[in-house]
Image (tube, rainbow, N blue to C red):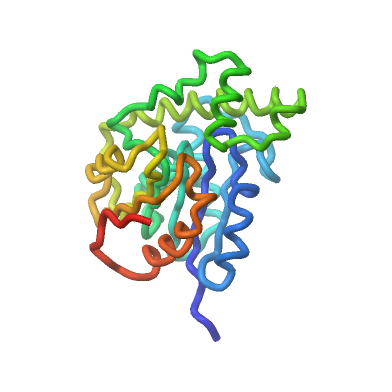
Length: 243
């Protein structure tokens, strides 16, 4: 009988659907890691559920995790999802059900504030879609289909608003879980040198890995999956690794 797989809850970037974004990871990690995409309300197969605040969203997502995951688990989030991952870690730790480790990718630490390019409310719909598409975070069909464009804009504006609020939560105590930070060396939203500020948000082990690639290096750089596997399976104090 083989060893039990590592459970890793995954959250997507602004406007993204985790069950779509992380579908390739489910097959790549089938024997080692159980990838558990955590969609926001109204995305993927998750029914719509209006949330009025970041805290309400974190509470809802955390309760979903605790219902679906039993035993040790990890949480991974990219960009907006990384901000949610940190707060889900904090929330579940408060209930004695926190993850072993929290992996944050493509995101500036809370104290750094949101990057200028993330400020969606000041952009027109077309400008917002073009900017996100240029970063590689929007499938081409969303630009050519009127209905999909409207849906994308609505999701992006809500996610960016919540993402900005998450950036303001910089005065909260550090989480107890191990904190693993991933960044892209050409990422205009979260540069590797800015990622070092995550040190103040983890009370346990904090590691850093940076990769060739832009904001969506997690889906384009083949070294990401084996690097995460090593972080989940091999205790180490190595930091600043480059891929």
